[in-house]
Image 1: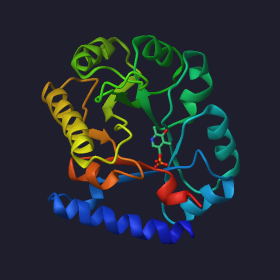
Image 2: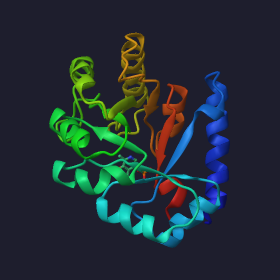
Image 3: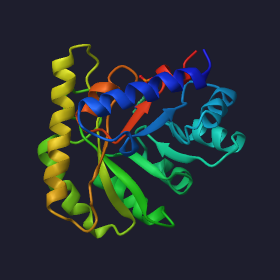
Image 4: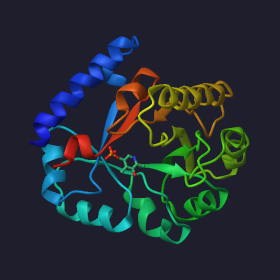
Length: 223
Ligand SMILES: *Cc1c(COP(=O)(O)O)cnc(C)c1O
């Protein structure tokens, strides 16, 4: 199916999920995750009106950037090794995977301008997942204040791999509460107004729980 058709269905579902939770669809951004697909398929997404694209590796990012035309906001959604920071950081608009101070320090050293970052949180506590434990996030953000190139726009999480709606919903709700708590502190370096959560299988639930960036790969650009 064409990206355009899949995209229409997704936009409809987003509108419905927003309506169910009394939100407006304008506050929800779709990051089209193009990491598995060809340059041509990614270009289709841009032409269908999806101008936020997400990649999780340096190689994929540079390849897409060299080949695509149109105005695109680039999101880096994968875990970022410190030694790759110098190559990646000035090519992207958003980083979704800030998860340690050593990474923040390297970003601050290499970035030419302020980077909009999401702090990645491991809400579910699964050992194989990246991200900070929820109870460490507030302190982490306070420690980031010395890095003037880092702006914490929000929090990001990956939900557990389950179809259990209650488990998914609780994960998204917990992240949303944590976002509100941080937002209330009015930290200068961390407005923390955004929530990056929800993927192909759970974005509607994530939207009902407050997502402002959903990261959709297979459901949008998959074959
Ligand atoms: C691959 C990936 C996605 C998209 O996954 P789909 O299930 O294909 O929608 C979203 N977020 C991150 C961090 C990813 O690595």
